[in-house]
Length: 386
Image (cartoon, rainbow, N blue to C red; front, side, top):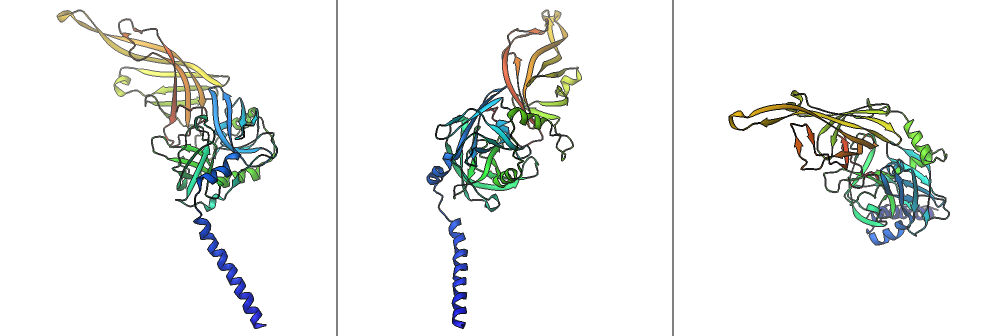
């Protein structure tokens, strides 16, 4: 009897020793990017559609064989219509929306598929800083592009969103949004979401466990893209913020600071000018009215200039106040980014101070602004050039 007990204890101890040793072996599993790519790529898709700003591109990955796809909310939120292209070449001309989380920028969409290839989801709570990862996506529409790197850090959302993000140096570009960040077991541990501009490979992904939570809590109702936007517009302000829409913005083109106030369907913008210009009564103001999907309006600029008449001792200097007005429209309005188009005069345009007018030539120009208090510079699907 005692021999039997000793034998059983020895067996149990050997089993426990085997399990303990298995974990380090799994952690030291070689990172075979070619094999990981073969396993993950069939379940990664290209999302394509149109919005008021033009053609949009993004990435997603299939999480169920009946066609559920995870992606970023910002990839689909402004689409008027959209479709999905599988790695196999199969196309789906439309999709519906099952669930979304605006704070974490996650969405689950669905295509009418059957027996589709899926990806395996990992546990982002087990992610370790320094472990190798692989990103799959469609940068600039180049479907199936693969890059590798490491998990650089696990940190709080840089914009104070109240959740964790995975930082990685795996190279990503506009079009990677919504794509998977994958570990050595070919499991998705994050959703590529945004990068910080002005830095080298400062890329971020939303931990996959947030997607698990969204999928588990999803009521199962199906929404169209219009239904989703209606629900987003009625979701109310962020209760954790005193003001969900920032007032100070910085132009990504000129670097000037803008003060913006939104009042329902109207937007008022003031450009902060140097003290010397303000002291002589210069101002640049704009007012916009919402019309359909865009805000249309005019920018009014007023300032003073000086010109000289006569020569030598007979020369006299005169001051003239001049005003200018140009058309402008806002095509994208979000808490971290504003984009639009305006009519501007090209560089080198001659200005006649005496007459108070410039050459009549104007051309359409795209522009963008970022909330000056925000570190996040997401590469939105609607702005590949940014």
